[in-house]
Image (cartoon, rainbow, N blue to C red):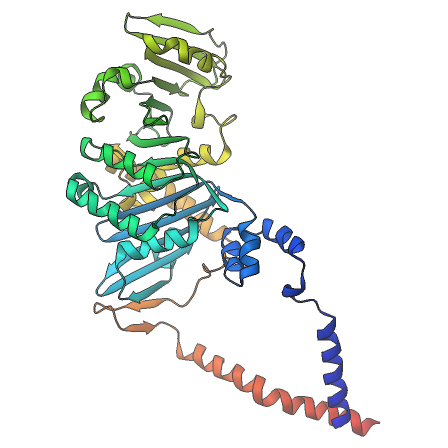
Length: 457
């Protein structure tokens, strides 16, 4: 019997010696493997050892969009990794700590496991997670959207304290990002956001800044009209973007220049505006596109264009027509992110599905204006059946990203210190039984098999 046991151990040792461990792979192979990893797999690999960290840092990774929100004792981090793919962390203040809701590709809070973390400041904790995940040289972000507490930022003293908290957490580290986005800015917050965007991004890589207004109407669920006004700041394009879900005649024809200058932009005069771009896809497909057309009213010039994708026009001061005309004339399609054929697939999906936030994330809807309640109720009628079908079609064996696997759900009491597990006693009994089988019955079974083979010989 002892002979067979020794033979079995020798065979296992020989097999183990022939296997190549991860540490034995050359760096070139590891780098090729890392290039095919998803975002959280790279984060996991980066935390294993110093060599793996260097390998991950040498492979670039692009993230389409990131959202960060903070208001009313809640914090949100949403990292979009593709179309209908996102990693979501929602953090809420609870007693002397915070509760973290962590999910992947899912907004349903009833299906999201929770975890209580004591003695943590809400904002500092959220910013620390954001920093540890995204402020790295190997991460390139297309756009970061900031949904910050409007009431907090309106007070100049509070806004300065807010910037100091960011500076304390981030230090000298900055985001590698192309576009910084905010929810609607007021006169009080306009200068804050411009300074904020510059302080916390690599300015040479930053292509533009943007704030977004979504005007909802109950007649349609998707944006069909968009208006951009470019007011450059420090040499970068600074867009004020309005989306409307219907071809509203007032929205379509109204000249927004004076309205914007008086109500939105703080301290910006007429000559600071570069251009305004109007996009309309409400009448597509256009069978007979018209040639470009120029109109002039002494102070402004409007160039109108059309193609099979829709109509668009550029409005600009006469003094800036020569500098901008060549840029606009070379566009084959000026519909931008509203065009299904020419837009980036993620950008098109993202803007088309912005109204879904009214159902999925009603708390984080600061960019919406208009018939929000009525629009949300109509959207809910169509969304219920769609959500049920998505849940039914979900693959139960689908893999989750590292760190986002569904874990043990925990009931958080009002005192925020006592956690009660929802696992049943039967599950605990199965755990103990597995333990006993592996460490007690397995050696006995091996001995019996070996003894029977010895008797047979």
